[in-house]
Length: 544
Ligand code: G1P
Ligand code: ZN
Image 1 (cartoon, rainbow, N blue to C red):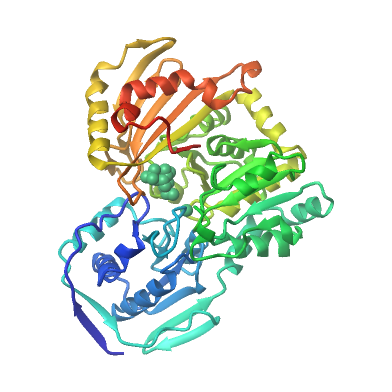
Image 2: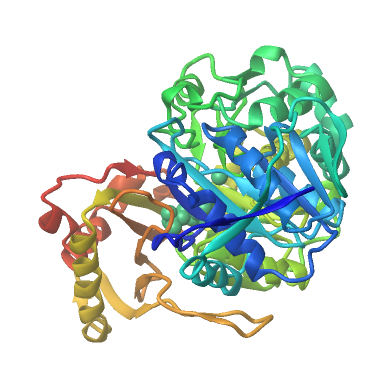
């Protein structure tokens, strides 16, 4: 194996965001761009000689080409084995599982998650550490710093590797193991949930279901698990064929983008359960006949019912949610007497808590839920959790949700996104918000009195690390909140996210439309941040 050292020059924009480095495909296709970033990762890591690296992606455009490039750089840098999903495919949670199960040194996951794919769309790369979770901030910072001074990368000159046939290949001392991307994951799911009960509930027609794979990675996983193993009819999985451009859609599981599913779930021939997942399989949207379950509520309901699932029958050690996620799960934790942690946005902040055994379940408002079974959020796991819950409670989704609200109260919640705002406008808006923070506490706005106004700063209770500037929060004395933050995953301009919630304990007033129930707070959010005034827009691009 002859190692070549190729001269390169740094790119100034290789700072990973909330979830790895995400850019347009055309940016990644610049000479040395992907190579630099991968070499910067390897230069920042120590002790991987002879060890195993897991490699796979969501199958979007540039996935295969990127895998071939990475194989050669990994070989030249001295890894001993590469485990690669057949066809270069691995869902994000499946990759996390494989890193853990085979005790790999780490893994590279190629995905831009729910962002669109294709030659003019997005691509991404993320490094996960040996626990199977996203690299912590100290590592991603090191990758970026290295990328700013890199002047060469190592590679080998070989023909492209066959990614399509399962089995082992060797290049010099390097073993390349092409594996079935689904089987280890399916086995893990079988060890968590009550598959015999699910099979029975589906064959008896008690549960009818529809899963929208959105032409993304979960198609093969859903077909194997839901259809082959649990006996759901083949037509229960729609858009099951992964496509490089996701059929021209955003593979983003929400009511706006998963509209085919949404239409059926709100029609008079809706099945009992409907769900969707995203580009790389880590997100989930849960619906029942005539009802959409917000991700924040879903997390709270899962926590409240976890004892019904075989793997969590002993109870939960604790739960965690990202700061902008609604406080619904906090109420469950308080009632069960278990700890509830509030972390910054991004799955990487849950890793330490999971590793330390402080939490069993965690989630984010952005359609992400997961547990200690892997170190990523997990779309199909959430789907199976809900199916298991419905099978055990023998209640429709709507009854489960309404019963939960009656018991714990409802945290009425929504998020407004203003996408592709010009960066200087977004920065000025954040500055304007910051200036108001010291003056807000104590001020009254109609029925709302500000209790606190600050910028969220997180201290990790396991390693003591501090993460500052994680979103601006305005909290009111009645428990309502408005949170503002700029997205760390976008690829064009800046995206402002506004998260709004209000607690409604009165069961007779819980069945309201969120936009109506939150209208006053939505007005206050505009008063504070002036996004409409400053951008000239009259509405958010996406409401979830
Ligand atoms: C978004 C979500 C965040 C999630 C991340 C990766 O990040 O808001 O919760 O962890 O995608 O899926 P953002 O664009 O807000 O930085
Ligand atoms: Zn994703």
